[in-house]
Length: 227
Image (cartoon, rainbow, N blue to C red; front, side, top):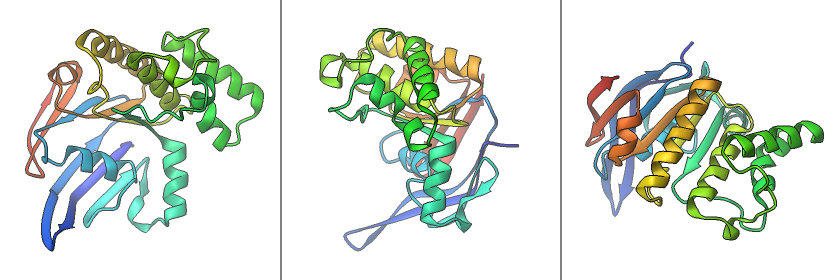
């Protein structure tokens, strides 16, 4: 079964009484364990695509299926539950909760899922170790570098063992050395856990790491390459 399928996906926004066509008929599918990047210039539709796949927005036309669930027939509450169970998110701004420690940020998805406290601690500490932050669970975001904060964000995305991780420009705020370390970490986790990663990016380094590169232009698929 495909973890993500889109069929003739379209998204149109209204901006000052003008119709802006962000996506124009995107049909793509992703298998378990893929490490894929959606690339293209600003305005090509790549972030919009990730938002629709992540059930953060709804399409104007077409369908999105996530882990076999047709999102078009689901309520907002059902979409929230599906998102919570199946999808992890990594953002360029990290989106950590500043008053919480690294451990608390990582464990939050498990707490929301009602996972027993012992398992929450075990899994959260293990993920912090996996991303190279063992012993740093008590630090708050302001006490960490950008690369360390992104590692916390990766651990938070993976702690609930999602089928899909969506990463929106995850290297945008990092230097080239840290970006490579973060990508190597995500590729290692992808290979070990068989989690599907889908990036939106304009970073050539991310494109080089991707095992599948999809290029969008003006809301359409311009090119697709498998490595």
